[in-house]
Each structure stands twice: as structure tokens, then as C-alpha cells.
Image (cartoon, rainbow, N blue to C red; front, side):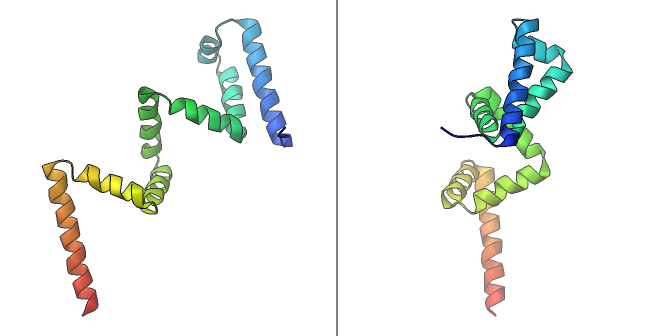
Length: 129
């Protein structure tokens, strides 16, 4: 059994309280969250404050193509998040291979990729002199 920290208990308690409030007011939790900004903020805040809840929510959001697209677009729209993702890709050889394969999958991508590689070769030769 994993014990929660004080913040985890508070977040879990806030989530349960918000869900109980919503359930008591209406059988439609999603509808209540859509209508009631305070309930939505409390539930989302509780999820964000608890790493296990936020991990579970992330897994659910990535579970369908439509939601995955929204998550990825949201991450890439934020400069800091996009930079973090790109840095992680750069440190993972398999991810770099995947990016290169995707870039080379059409003629314009191959041309761009070849131009970059030629530029790198020229720069390397200049640095050796």
C-alpha cells in the first residue's frame, strides 16, 4: 500500500469532494464540469496536484487518436514544452531515427534533409582546417 503525502491527500480529498458535489447535484459529471467553472477548476487542480492522478489522466488523453492529437498540438504550441520534447528526442537515438525517416519520406523532405547534411559536412571540413 502506497501512502500519499499531505499534498496528495489534500488533492485526492479535493477531487473526491468535487466529484461528490457534482454527483450530488447531477448525474452528469461531465456536464456539470462544463457548466460550473468552480467545480471544473477544483477537479482539474486536484488532478494536476497529484502525480498519480495526472499520470492516469495523461494516459487517458493519449489513449485515442483524437485526444492524442490535441495533447501533442497543445504541447507543441507552448515554446518551453516544445523545446523540452525536442531536446528529449535529440537525446534518444531511436527517436532521432524516427524523425529522420519521417523527414525523408517525401521528396521535399529528402531535399531539405540532404541540404542540411551537406551543410554539416562543409562545416565539419572547415573546422578541421
